Image 1 (tube, rainbow, N blue to C red):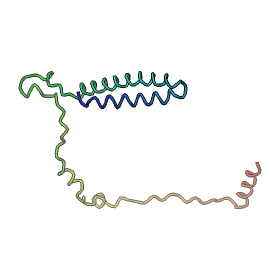
Image 2: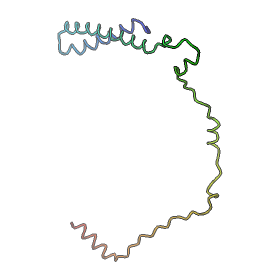
Image 3: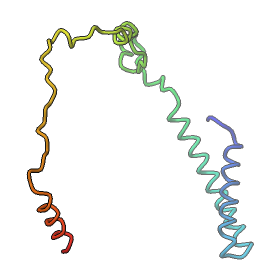
Image 4: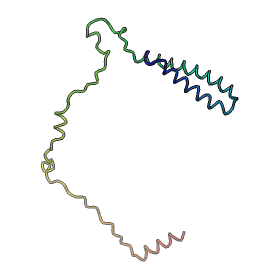
Length: 134
């Protein structure tokens, strides 16, 4: 297994201290120490279980691989290399000629109608006064 007994001991001591601190507020000192000792054992065993699980998960599983040629190993490993695309990137970075001249001069700017009021200013002021009274 990876790691050593020190990891389990540190894990257990952390559990003991946490349990002792939280238990002291509601219990007698000896009761807190007993509960801390129990939590030390539980946390020690949890650390052991955690290390054992991590070892099982992270260990390469060579026993399950077929004993044949390389063709039988196809699909068992994941290749993370990507193809070289530097030529395509260089093409994207090069300046392209302006295509607006090739399309012709069909561009016409938008000419929206002007918003001009044909109402009398006195009528508009009367309408605003009427609306603000309500």
